[in-house]
Length: 442
Image (cartoon, rainbow, N blue to C red; front, side, top):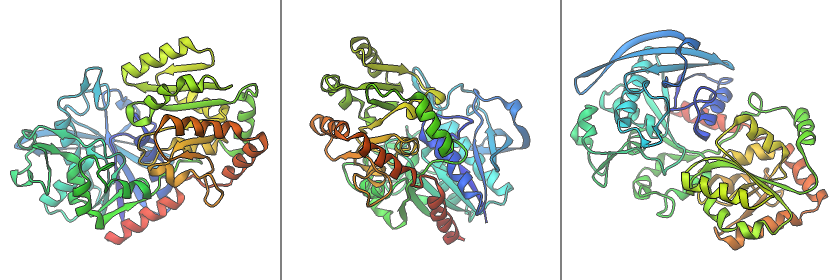
């Protein structure tokens, strides 16, 4: 059995969020048990000279032929293939620029999906593991061409669906019979994500609770009814992190924690994309209450301009609040090691990785108990992963959770940290669950 893991971003080659980290960590965990490789686009911001040339071929969409070059690289025992193609590889960023999403994203990722299909045939792939809307059309192409390849489709965040004008169907050579409610049509638009849901053999999402939530109108992003039609093939598998390759060992963590820790005031950190989903509005609304507590607060993030500006204004106003605009991988790790508490007030959270990283680093997470946060952070020692959670997304409950954290004695905090150090936050258990799904298709 040969598996090809397809993603629009893989750390350390290209990253905008947690998808890249999962696309790195999960295949690394699976390599012990299977013949797995990865494929992603070769964006204009990436250096072709770092990779070895592998193959070239062409793909055809609506009679238009696109020349494809494939490059390869190997890290940590996993081979990665990079698709260089017209439009797809001509951009400096992954999905858009300061003006918004690239207007030709449908064509860019349509070409990418057809290239994945052709590469899979050349590699004699058995199962293609697809991730999010950027790769979802692969499932439709496989079905339409009657190739017999098996597909697993993972939804990392249902809010991002790949919506485009109906004219892209002709551009991509997709027959009009697929423009129905049971297929790609979504309020007169084309919805790429629906292709993955409709035509993949198995659908997974990144936590058991999120798999249940997306079947409801509250979290279903308009697709809850469609997902209920396909829930017989929907499975929720909790994400993990690459604790071996990407993060320090336990001895080093203890030393680093001591190096960066300042015991004068408890340090709260938030490392996030600055978007509404992450609950940043709730935090801003709670600022006057938080700043009355004897704490230091540090936020590291990049995203919406108006949120960035507001945080800059607050940093200028309060001496105990520090804001770093942008993203810095090294600085984020330093923040985890220095912090006492991590804030994750997400309005919804399919899984989240920050809470795993925090607990691994000896930092206690404070989370809104939804999605994967509910599955991974618990206030009692019944399950692995200790932290503080709150149910309702209100200022009162959020501030109350922070006050509960501050009420913990140093001894209680040490007990929580020690408990979390014995938890397994790796992808090992989840990898075995994915492996079982792959085998069920063969």
